[in-house]
Image (cartoon, rainbow, N blue to C red; front, side, top):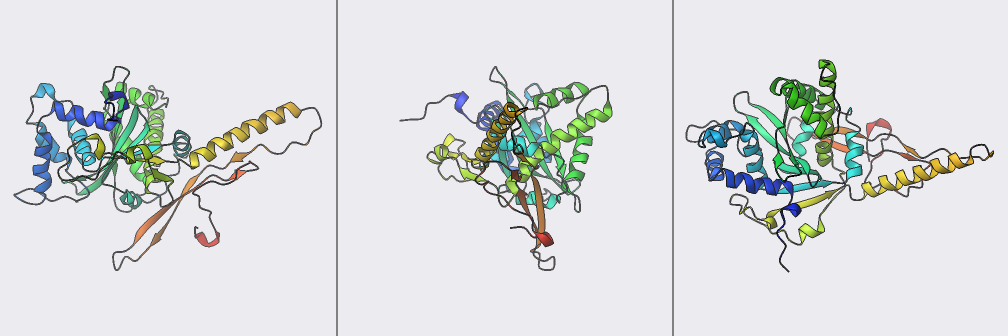
Length: 358
């Protein structure tokens, strides 16, 4: 039976790709021209992880009438061009995503780990109506690599909001916290007060607009929360499996000549096992709490309520600088469920003496 075409069932990045293609005819052939001329015909060279730099999409923007252009064209064009070559979606289990975002302060990880991203561009889906692109940008003026996050949100009327572009400068020697603080300064410089308030509200954060320090704190939390999801995709022990429904549809395609059809999309479910364990732990915790409450005053001996220590990331280096094989390995250390009726949590790592991880 042919797949029913229903825009509500389409992944948000695919819907936006079609809209952008229709709005800006021939935009991808213009991007192809820059992509193919990397370092040739008078153009500067850029890192191959960057499919097309934003300096190029800024030039492409001038082709179209000013009235049709929105201010986010350069970033969105670069993101969509990179995404359409792979069309990878990582759909996060909501409970795992919540758990990861709650460990937002865990940022003492080298920026180098972000180069472990499986593809030059991915889309992280929080739910069917909100998510963000993650891709590499090479600033040809400063020659500093960047990791960019471009947020999409589907509105109730079917339109798509796309007015947030988070930039993480990948400067040598920096860790994630350095990059996020630098990012927040950029956000504050580029967005006015009204736009900042709208963005933090959309992602469930609160901000006191009368307090600049509080605004910085909230924006820092927003950026560091989203990067937690990116780090999980970079972790060697991430819990992912290909989405069975999409797998039955997906077909290989020529990444240099994509047709931008639904079957080119590959989708991965993230946290499909860990999410179930988290929910089981929450249910056990609720039952224990209720039992403890009902036995208060009856002299019963009640065990401790199940609880978990917050998860965190562990990293270590392998290889040698001399032969160019040195790289950082990232692993997610899952919360330790204590006194809970938990059979296992998959996958997980445990810290051992000497700093080794297994």
